[in-house]
Image 1 (cartoon, rainbow, N blue to C red):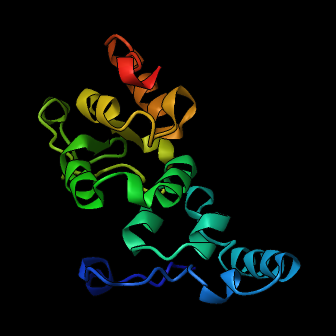
Image 2: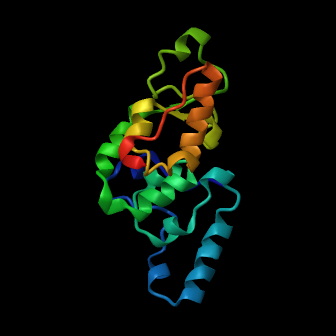
Length: 172
């Protein structure tokens, strides 16, 4: 199964997520839980890291959030939409995130990757690494040291022998 996202849908500012259900907020708790479960069941064939969490079903949002293979990050974005500049975050992702793995990139080119090259499996959070500046800037939104992207970025840094990124002072 696919998510039902097209390039046009992702590029349009006002596009709705295919996971969002307006009615989830206008019914009683038990009905909302059944609706959430039903939507999650519909998308159970998606790769595990891309399956919708309850917040994606109950919170109106742009579909770019749906393609992030980090459930903690998706939840935090949706719970804090009014607390950060979403456009700046989107722009920062373009240069602050790298997708590693697979074939197609020469070893010498890996050090020069800009975030535009993707040879890994983008639906698996283990393929991703955030740059140090991105981790520091969005530490809390990423879920801190327990967030999938932070943990995986620390792992990639360890593989290269780079030091771990410490939590920013304002995150403590």
